[in-house]
Amino acid sequence: MKKIVLFMLLPFFFKTLPVISTEVDFSLTDAQRYQLSQTATSPTTSLQIPKNPVLKVSVPVYKDADLKTPAKTLSSDDSLQIQAVEINQFGLPVFHLADQTYMLADETLYYQDVVLEQTPLSETYWTRKIDKIYDSPFIKGSKEVSQKPKDYTQVKVTAVATTHSGTYYQLDQYGWVEGHMISSQDSRMEKVQDMLRKKYQKADYGISVKQLETGQVAGINADKKMYAASLAKLPILYYTQEAINQGKINKDTKFKYISKVNDFYGSYDPSGSGSLPKKADDKEYTVDDLMKKVAQQSDNVASNMLAYYVTEQFGTDFQNYIETISGTTWDMKKRDVSPETITTVLEALYHQNGFVLDYLSKTDFDDKRISKNISDKVSHKIGDAYDYKHDAAIIYTKSPFILTIMTNKADYDDITAIADDIYEILK
Image 1 (spheres, rainbow, N blue to C red):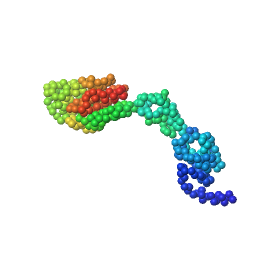
Image 2: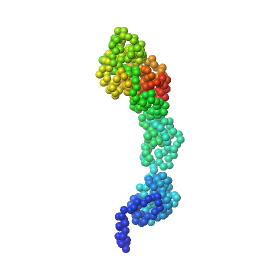
Image 3: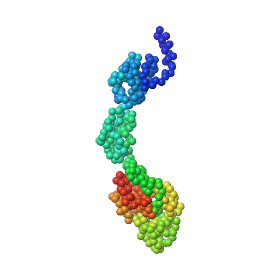
Image 4: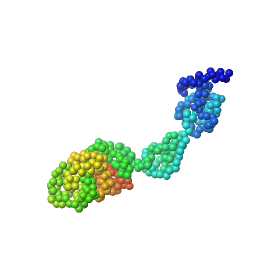
């Protein structure tokens, strides 16, 4: 008789079962329960109540252990409170829930939300924007704590852990945060960018900030070209310093001030800034004198003399050098460049580490613009023409950074305000 019944059931076992919605009441036949048992937890391998179980999907629960009478459907957001694991009359493991309902004990329906791995650490990180901090690595039941470290500051990390929700780090004296909320690198440039976006997002501002140790950048219209005025003298200073470093000239090399130095493509108007005579005097001036006057007074004639004699009126070698360090070609007469290009040239000057940096730190313009309120050493070059007012600086904080501010129809106090706000974050 048993063989006959088994023979009659075989076609059903090999027939594809229709999809059954868990949102409506239904009852299972013995054969369907047999099919379910193929994915259920084996009663010989796991009869323990899982730790901190969380549903993966919506699951039907029943009023009886044999799973015959539907009770309701639990969603993945519902709490799963298990008080016992039982074996029903069909040999299937079922969870006896706290509300006296039952569900199939199938490991494909839930996971144990526990800390998967935890390792001690003793490292210093930087916080980013801390949204939430917990009393444990985040699992079901973790609680938020109210005390948080300041955003964009250094903290000590004492442990790292992984859960089903991700990777979490323990901040000493605070709690646990998700990995993306801290950084092994200085994160303050994110704060700079956020501040610039909120306060200085203006069409007539071009701002470029670069932290030299990390390479992190921030800015507003940083790639927007603007008339650079005397900022375009920075490549001349770089090239002259390079010629000195290579032994082509030295600080005592002398050049004669002849009329031709003020009359070539890209030369500055000699009637502009500076203390050298506006007309050629046929006197000789040392390279050192000329570099000082360009750096400290933004002297147009001194710039013209270095450009005439050292760069050979912005010749091919000069153009190749400047394109290499700045990543772009320069038209030394039009002088249209972006703040980030000026920042790149200043970075090249910083790594060149020549004496011209000292000259740029003691200028006639130190009481205005970027350097006005900054207590750390500042090497900077200003630029003025028409409605354009600029300043570009290396600021020697503990983690030095470069700041280029180019403006149209603004004033010196506007530049100072921008610099002060950035310095307050990065000092």
